[in-house]
Image (cartoon, rainbow, N blue to C red):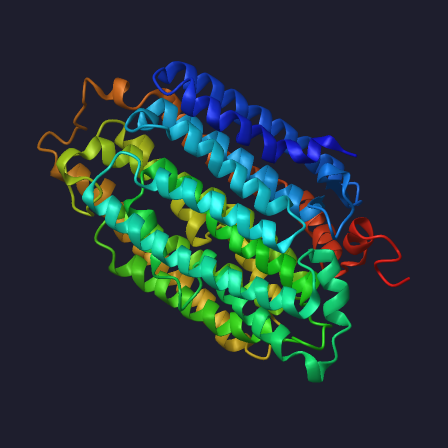
Length: 513
């Protein structure tokens, strides 16, 4: 067996207890161990991505028990891509947290960070629906600890809402899993793909109920309307590095929708048919609208960025709702782009807020902060990326989404929503940028930036470098868009033809051959 497949789960799972027990009183040791572990995790993810790019689906059978009776991890192009994106993002965020001192504002930051990575990587690799639930719970517990890191009343309140909403989703997840198991006798994804297709349409009522419950659960994770209200409060009140890491959290829900509603409940399955797309489309349109109006109405920078993330999720889910090869290609490209853009803006927001003093993240003009021009340039680049203006990857991503949805019956409504939403988001970011940087320059009596002699201690060079790396990744995604979309095209084809996935996991006898 390919033992490297289990490393993204085992490595952080082993490292987290060591950090919690041995290095909890030594921040330097904790930083060294955690950064080394994350760097090694990124290297392993890169190797697995290169392996998956060859086109084969690889499996890892825990305890050497064959599926569907044993626990199995599955590596294909989609899971490898998500692993690589997660680890690269984690490395950027962790570097910023160390450089800015955020990791030293509360206990067990690095241990919780590694548990979070374990949950996310496990969710992307698992080939079993119940173990997806288990990994959801692991990342939920770790994310709650990270969210309240540093304390504060608002943070605790937002964390409580976040946990209650996600626990509700976990309860529905268990109901769905129970229904599926009662109907099919299995929870292995590949085995379900075979058995669900054999259920006659007239006997498929329970499977349709389970499929709908799962869609609600994954919509909660992806912050899709009408269960999107937890995201703005959670992201806006979380520590900025944690909010940046949370940019991948909503993508776990997106990944689950792509995996379940192509492999198990695909468009060719009579029991469910086009049901997922029929529900996702209106939800995505409303989510986009809420995000856009939230950006326009925000009076603070962090909530504005949170609503921008919500709007980007609306665009992403619009692409996924079509479940066509071209739409999935566009969705995957936009998924990578929106994750990196959100992370860069949250980290940049923390840089700016830490320098503005009492005004914090309120969108009010103050005296210019140190390095005002550099921060303005970085904010401008991040805003271009998030709003989808040329020349960065957001522009290409939206073009791909618009082109992929040309054949939809609702093309006029979808195009109008995306284009108008993009325009209003640009207005919101332009307003924020002018208040934070342009009007700030007019406030200073001398017209010169107000320098803080202690600034270099508060925000070292690595903090700004972390933001620049995220923006550079977006530029690379633009420059190598052809190669990226080529990989996404192969991923889409592999996803929409689950036979390779099923054959890799199950024996011919289990498949009915």
